[in-house]
Amino acid sequence: MKRQWYQTVKNRIVQRCVRSRAGMTLTEMLAAVLILAMSAVAVAGGVAAVKDAYRKTTEKAEAQQVLATTVELITDVLSEAQQVRFGGDCGPEFFSGETGDWMRLSVVPYQVAGEERAGICKVYLSDDTKVPLLSDGAMGGLFYTSFDVDQYRYADSCFILEDINVYYKHDAANAGREPAAHLDELVVRAVNLEGQDE
Image 1: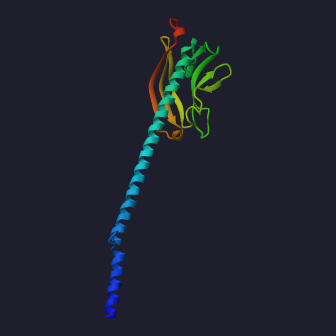
Image 2: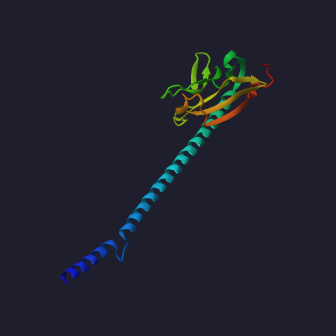
Image 3: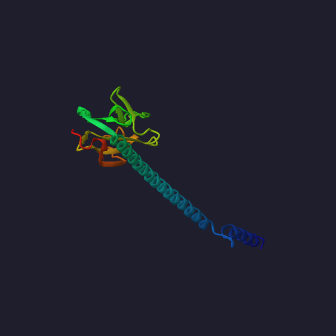
């Protein structure tokens, strides 16, 4: 009888530990923990995916902003031209009414990490000084600008630039790089040169 009483008490304790009337069984508890862990991983993965998509979208928007600012600065520089002459392989040279110097647009290729003076530049012909249109800081340290120098030309009182691109700096060594932002062609009318012969 004593043995039977001990067995009954033991069974009650085991039942209380394994299946509480107020809670779950051990199996149910482990399953719930596993489901919660899997849900946390899925949510964390979703957050990472959303964060990555947001980063890509903001970088694309920043690249478009850099392109728009570059185009605006090119337009400002070229529209002030008062005289133009042809500079051979480098495209047209112009006399800037704003600075009183002969200038041309050029591209300094971005080659080295940490290089801050790269991209589309104004070149002062008197001493061959190259001044970037946009500073590295203005491009967030992420981008550099470029255009097709071979297609830089002057015709009918207009300067024409083709393939203006904004590239990621980290893609500089990649020959197959894709621009973050692109403009096929920019035509800038030099109002001070209208009616002058080329």
